[in-house]
Length: 446
Ligand SMILES: [Fe+2]
Ligand SMILES: [Fe+2]
Image (cartoon, rainbow, N blue to C red; front, side, top):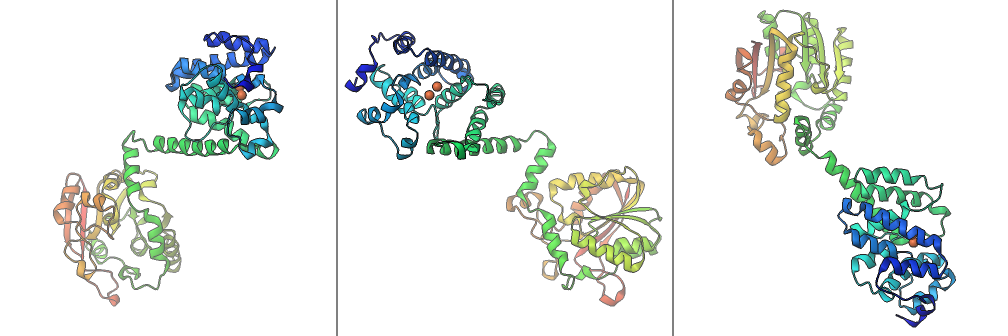
């Protein structure tokens, strides 16, 4: 033991830590600190197992953590220097903070403790530090829980977090409390600031870990969504410049849709158009006597569609939303139309998409679909990608072309095919829209 400590250690150190600690505090008539360290020891032992800490280590660290309280605060700096304890410049502003380092030095020199876990925990019991061990955290929080003062409201919250096994969050409650008080405190130790940053990132990581738990099919769908691009921003950008030379910006209905109505395939009634864009098919259908609900997830497209409907003096219920956010209307529609939406739908969402179309149609109701056909990339068509490929590439690459076989595979269990053909190319003055790289198909719900 360094000679400078001798005057403070006038009792015999027997090796029974609990008795020795009691003797040393009795000698200094510091019953208050003795009571406190016993309480901290009790608390630290109580929560040790819960957080994977050896109860014995927790007890020893707790019994020793405030042993330097027997040294008057005005002697702490010089004694620390004599013991080669590194005192930081900032600690001189509030020398009492040095007691944690002095307690460590005394644990080593007076009580012969060499276990680095215990020594480290004692050394940061007031401030904590970055990369704190479980024992550091247990001692730190047991100390805060054992303060007896009615003003410490955070103790109740800390206890609740401990009960929930959330040690990092319990610590963060205290560290945030310090952070909020920082302007009124003599010192917020740099170790405390670093420890708080650590805890913030650990807690945030904890939230991520929890949020990214797949517990059901919905979570699985959300995870797959997260791998791919959010669709709405792309489509808003796409529709924002109306002067662009995009074939389907013309205000004509699909040629196949016209033909369905002209051939009398589809009786008038309730219609839903999914992915209606600027509304050309929905408006035309309303003019032909349908009561039309039409959705698109692009605000720009819906704004344009509403303007067109107003100009044409027809009533269409346009809504800016995803088909997946539609309020279910079971067996309500006579006709559901999809002009180029399916081929932009991610394969995992297609399951729900087709289920939605099926459930929303009346039995015997019709489903009209135009979508990219394979083999026309040179004239504006899309690539034929396997569903797996989309996830491997994490991209739809501007749309997925469907083979005839694939469309039948997806639809034939629930729908009879009424017509299946290539879309007919239409000139601008034909009054209809048609491009040669799409399928046009009509299905009837079984
Ligand atoms: Fe302390
Ligand atoms: Fe303490």
